[in-house]
Length: 133
Image 1 (cartoon, rainbow, N blue to C red):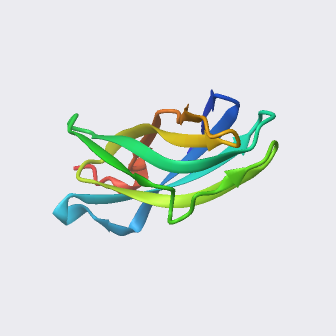
Image 2: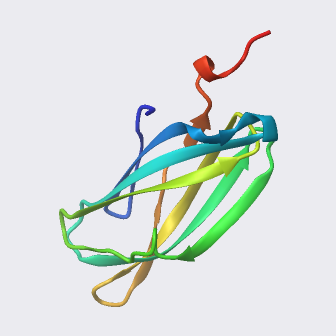
Image 3: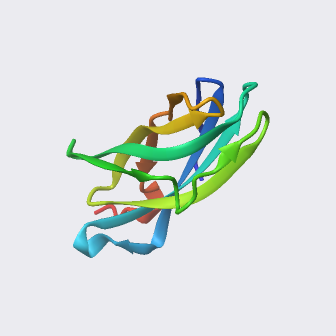
């Protein structure tokens, strides 16, 4: 896994770690699978629930894709002050590297919505997996 990518946004801390998944990749078909683990922590004083996410995914050629939807991995976790939620997901790319960033849409206990921004986090196939000719 890489060193963590960290952001602080609207009283939430987001820590992201990425890893190349060799077993799920197929370089002959330009298919590279990356896993990422996200830890979200409420560092504030109000309870809030994660409702949706929006991702920007850019491959190594600069092609940008967008993904959005409800919750994360089928969950819409609530966070009391000090509570955390961790999940793992994946990102397939057609290139050896890329990056991803976005935000989570939250709603607090009073019904106010707000965003928490993720850090920009990078994906990269480690050098030991790349054939050098």
